Image (cartoon, rainbow, N blue to C red; front, side, top):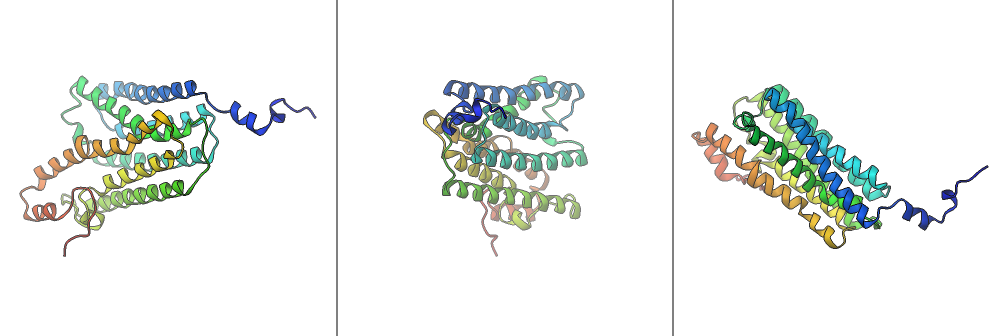
Length: 279
């Protein structure tokens, strides 16, 4: 039976053949960034034409999945760490994307975009920001997946997975609790479950899970790649200072700010970091 030349190469030689050079690795990172932005810009065109934001969050989630799979396949990565990172990103993006897609189709619109959609410039900027969000959030995972010399899994990776699992669990539970509350008590703010510990526990969970991803990726980072540890910092900044908490806090104040119960809830419950409710 004929045997290919590659089949008889020593294992170390085969490993080198399936790895990217440093130049190719940098170019792949650029391609991942370009893909994240191009998908948003393409999706913006029909969204603006139809004046709809219904596919905004779904597009973001699919972009996370697409960029991650592109990096995995284009880099030829087959080490366990890359596969674990891919699985964790796909699980998170698939769950959150489907949840947000069902929610917006149930509610019909997202108030965040009411003043943005009519302006082509502002609406385009929102889609562009999502592309930046996707790339910078994924950058630590992408650096690990395109590493020239992946390191063996260690205790650090196990800790990272546990951190990710904790954050993912908090986000899932918080989202489900809020959905159930809205059905049972429409028009009333939620102050039970995890929401009695934090006014935004779902965002806390998201920040934590991306910190877990960064911990898993950190074992392979070298030189300039340590800059990709900005990933969880960027997520925290965007959710707490830009597009998450500030918008929701203002909306809540406009809606319930005059209610004594809400004033008490707001004064006793942390904005983000969970704390047991006061008795």
